[in-house]
Image (cartoon, rainbow over all chains, first blue to last red; front, side, top):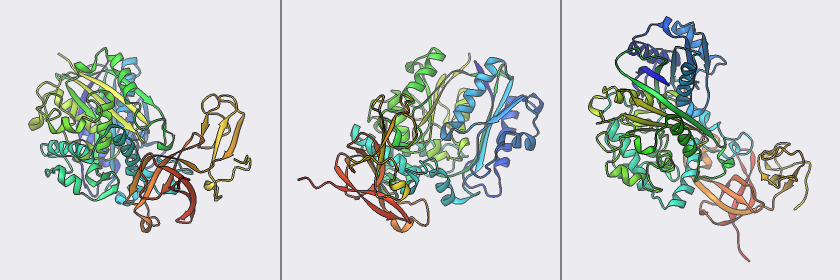
Length: 378
Length: 123
């Protein structure tokens, strides 16, 4: 068991003039303050990567910059799954006694540090260098392939996926830090410009600047008691060409492992933080985990099940689709929002009873999966 | 199907699609390596594929990743299940749909030779 004793999150969007270390530092400082800890209390440091600051040793670059001398430090690279993988490792580190307070931090000026074209090119490199990249794919194209097959298999229409973009925007309108807050409709999503069919612009998360951090501790440091009680992973492939199936991924086994560790079931879950790089990503994850039947995610979003005051609130900060996506910090924002919800600090977005949360992220092309089960302590 | 142990295929500029198979466990795969990824066996054969298969997934890419590819957009990227039993990414006729039977030819895309699938004319 471990405690999420502090969280920090910057605004996401266009933040010109701020580098990766600036955004990491802002989020880390906020997380330390929130936990009531000082720099010397931090004995573990885990960071991710930043495409605008490629470095062999990002954790010690950050430690030196921020002013930490941890006993344990390194970076993790697992694409979109990195944020939850960092939290999972921190959980095991404090649970095993290897560290007492682990700072988990990410930040990147992905939007203004390089521009959208460079970002699109850098991200496409997760494709196979010999067998895929010469064909000119993009991250949306990999997910467009997945979407075509999944929608074909389960009879899902583009308007069904659009409901998930509308939902995330509805949430973001209630968060002052979100990149996109103006309400959108299904018609707006359907009419947005084509990117990689069936995915259109509003089916895709934006490229953002931003930072996010949390402190994961062996003991609670204050009144708010939010703890990680289980975690699990599953890794099935790297490249979309090599995936055994585009209708069954590693989400179900990863969640099953996390639930087994936490000794809970899906029926116990009252809050959801699910990776939403594209509308299709969110639909597949919700459906593979079993939160919705196959093909039902869009209709359930439209019916209000995932609203902040609905039966099962989901990504109430607006998710990657509307809060924004700055790389590793993107999914970290889901974790921050979960902690804020469980400590009753989500303001206009506050859910009624977020007592037990399931967090799930994926990296690559639904290649790597990490699940966390987080509980509000009585 | 010809055995081609020199391994020439489109990734090296040859107008061909190659795949591998394991003599031990019969696994077949596309990304080249000198062992079987399923059983670890070293008795691996490299063969040329006939170039026929069935469309598994498609996406019409409107937003190309590089300046060099932008004039070619929109282009259809697809996954094809080759008749030999492996899956591959390629380009294809924008009218292709999941489940269509297809046949490969080779075209140039930004100075690279790539596989391009057309609908297979039956009979």
